[in-house]
Image (cartoon, rainbow, N blue to C red; front, top):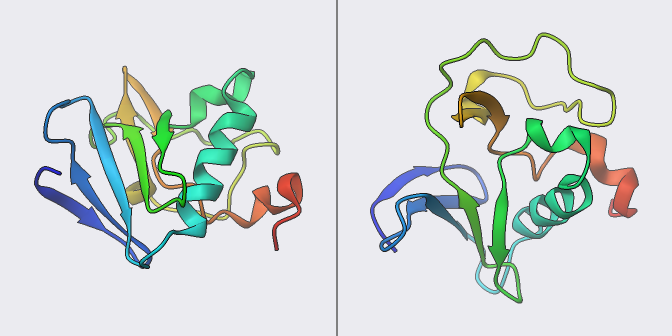
Length: 123
């Protein structure tokens, strides 16, 4: 792993040592992380839909969910979407959960959104 570039309640984010286009989200819980797993499942669910443009792309996940690979987004430089479609709307607010990827704003932290729970019957 490369340099630590951020952290939250359940994960620490590192630059990828060999591929500068990726970040690694490591669980702060040994043995796996529901947030990583949920984020990956959300991406997989939406990646072929019109809503994918609102999400930063997940590239891979370790078998137990301890590590998640995601495309690296920069700080948001565009105006955030004023209104998101209900299918992708989240309870996550604030620009810290958004990044700029290929010139558009994307959610970079969406694994804890309660609005996605019904998709998977998780909690």
